[in-house]
Length: 201
Image (cartoon, rainbow, N blue to C red; front, side, top):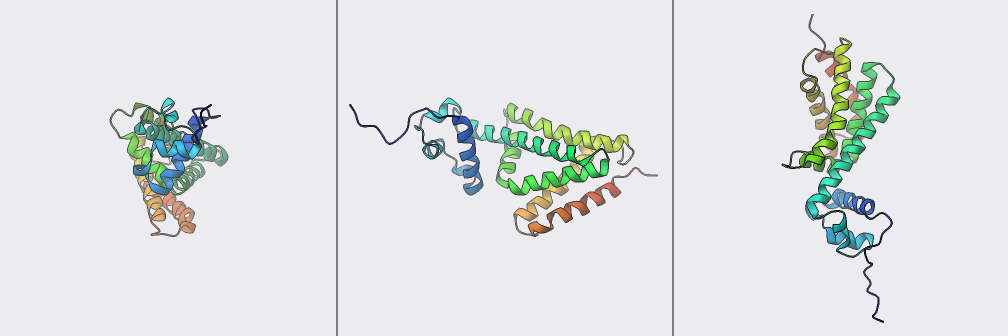
């Protein structure tokens, strides 16, 4: 009989999940440019051809990572909102804190999520992104309905807050501000947003 090769065959308990986990670790450590299906196959212990059963090419893997990232962001926001109660200011603070923590704990993944979302033809990524953004838009609509925020397009109103939160996360990730200060900065930013976005009169 021929000798057994050191490389394992296709079989793996949950190859897709294992590849995504390994890809996310590689993304965080080395960036998206260094992601290789062949290297990931070696890491999870399958043949170099095995990943193509789930991801025909590298771009498909990156898109799947982005989709999974948006699903996780949606789950994180929903959990935060569920624990915050019904009051709009408390819900807004909870969502803002949850978003910035996600953005600092998953910096490389979030960058990939946004980049992939705007890549032509990335329909599945766009669909995955719709859930967390609809959640945030719904939160802004709640504030408008209660008279806490000015009327208008909720996406337009919310982008001001989201841009502020993303900026804070970028500062924290770049060590411009200390990570320990992030929650306090988020709190201050939400307070300023609530004051600045109040209806006139």
